[in-house]
Length: 464
Image (cartoon, rainbow, N blue to C red; front, side):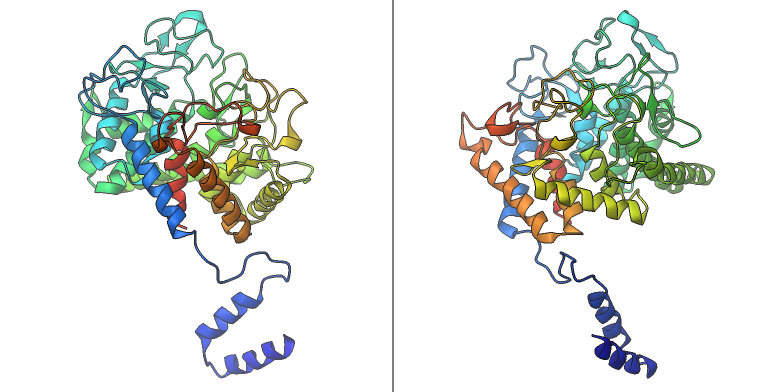
């Protein structure tokens, strides 16, 4: 190899074949142990087409027409004036902000649907006055609700469909979840990217424009001014990420902070498009501050592994989803990103984070105890958010592996597709894939025909 490099350098001195030389050095700069060949195959076309078609059909099954209850158990019918997109067929009988946002990059939600749902969120957003609810719950000014019922009324907390005074006992937080504020921004950004029609942001609802509402929602959750990270306390807790709303996380919160990072970048682009030049620098500064503090706050201070922790307080276990999402966003420095990918690949090989292509939130060998994955959970071990497996996060996982060990990425993708094919809801009664979540040995399957389980992965994998 040394001789060959010398020959190539002789060509370089004569200014010959520079493009070829660049490719040569790229090929020969990998260590001998590198798992990824420079030339590799993409995802199997037949499998990707299957995932595409299933995503299309699940999104269609999740639509609830005006005047309909979707065929589910909910007595209310959709009176919002347009077709609502719910988290899945008969799964959750309301419009959920985060599930919708996590599905918009699939390409199967139209610009008109994006606009309708965005304006619905604006209408349901709290106004300038804090709401005091029963059981010590309160809704800050400009807060975004957890979900919106078929009648258009907001329900601010997980675990309840109530839009009145009694919206729960605080088990899922005394404040509305944090993530929906930033998912609101992502919906608006996706809508704008699809149309580049800035007039949408001038539309007024109850005296505030769409862009005003986005900025106020972004500023609503509690954050640490020094690090830019989202945070909460046990005494006045907000759920950071709705896919952990049955778990108690306190202190600084990884996933909510990552969503804030993304939203800041999206608001910077929107502010630029709308001519708000002074706001662009503000949002870019937020991004820069968060990026600088992610690894030092959530990384392993003893450098034992590359996982990011979910929080700095209760339930500070290694967060598989959070680590994957940070990599997806490109929010980590190079060394932290490399360590994260290595930890992920090692865990997949050991079988501690995947089952049938689905992804656990905590590695099985890093559970808090023998009885619970997260330190404090409302769920039994190996069920739902406390150790269940989700295809919602599979796209992030396959994408992360794609850059390190492509055969391993293809293995996980194949396992996911085998699961979806075997349990495809379109086969008829008794089948339910894509499930929201499932446990080991085919147990603890929950909520069939769940949109985010395929819409989020497809939105990522179609670009690989």
